[in-house]
Image (cartoon, rainbow, N blue to C red; front, side, top):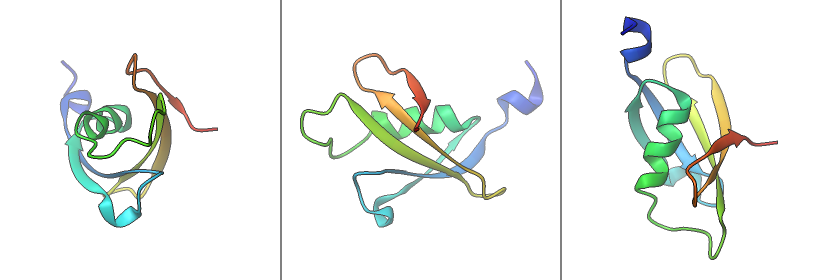
Length: 80
């Protein structure tokens, strides 16, 4: 396995429907993996919504990505 792919990074992740102060620090190898890890332990879902928008911020680089996660399938796509 490629060492760069298997290395984990620290991300700050929060759902867009929650305040930023409820963000969690998550160690995962990719932005997408961090988004899914956050969703797996999300304490409050927005009503009957089937999608949740999640903001993932790489602590080291400062890069940030937003994903919409389908709660039924676990599929992720960029917010748009």
